[in-house]
Image 1 (cartoon, one colour):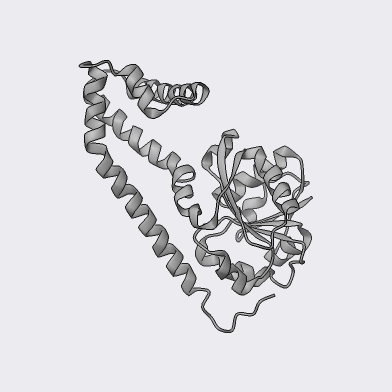
Image 2: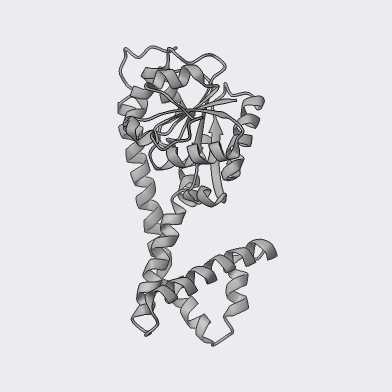
Amino acid sequence: MKVGIIGCGSMGSMMTDKFYAAGECELFVTTRTLSKLEGLPNDVNVCKTNSEVAAASDMVFLCVRPEVLKNVLDDIKSAVSPDTLIVSLNGSVRFDLIEKVLRTKTAKVIPSVTAEIDRSQTLVCYNDLVTEKDKHRLKDLLSCMGDVIELAEDELGMGSELVSCMPGFIASVFDVMCTSAMEHTSLPKEQVVSMVLNTLTATGELMLKKGMTFGEVVERVATKGGITEVGSSVIYEQFPHTAQELFEKTLEKRAQTAEKCSSLFTDDSIERM
């Protein structure tokens, strides 16, 4: 299978590396600054234009920012065949907007930075033109990065918060925890961070392997009247407001981004392929 990647920023570069390492496809890539691609292996095809990538590929990943997506679709629409599967990494741009420019088989994919260690919970959704064969091929390709989870398009926003944004949220929370801990200990920062990270990952593994809930872990550790119970009570009393505000603000920002993107696709002169 021939796979194209347009845009080699953080996610595009990571996917290029993962797909190449898996060895299941021939790669065609391009990005705005071609000099960034000079370190790629010789058997990765570096293309000068977006349309060149689209013409050569069975599946084309559009790893570009939302405000650039329409221009890229305009670039490739004359080069895409009816059998080509277009894969957008922009959850904020709806299928109906994409189809104003290019009415073809289209999927949306939301990977996570944890794909770098093959542990991504990669989200995927499809428009109504995508066949079961297309879905199978895409899921097989994405499996080199971890698990693949199919969602409805209208669930992709919250899904993105839970798997794509969540590493950043988790890192932020435990950065605050470690910083606060440093005020009460003489342990070096590196040791504090290492202790917390290893406990964090071990707790996750424990829950997954034993099928435990968050509440069951708390109950297991927090003896009545003990130290953990006191600390957990503080979190359950004060953190819900922070979590609620976090999701309200991120979903609000997502809606604003979607509205801004929508305005880029309102030109009446847009012609479908």
